Length: 74
Figure 1 (spheres, rainbow, N blue to C red):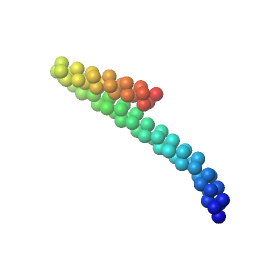
Figure 2: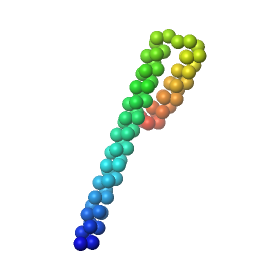
Figure 3: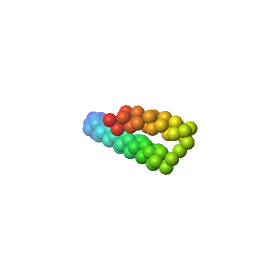
């Protein structure tokens, strides 16, 4: 009986790793899409006009989001 349990555990262990990896890939894709969406929103705001102070803030946000996008999205 003990051998049977060990065999089942050993057989299922690789599946948990694959599931975790797939979940991680899904999280990365989600983060990538969210980052792209944030960039699009800021760009849309910038097309509507803004003050110098707002422009500086949005440019900084875009720099940070683009760096994040490069890191996350590949």
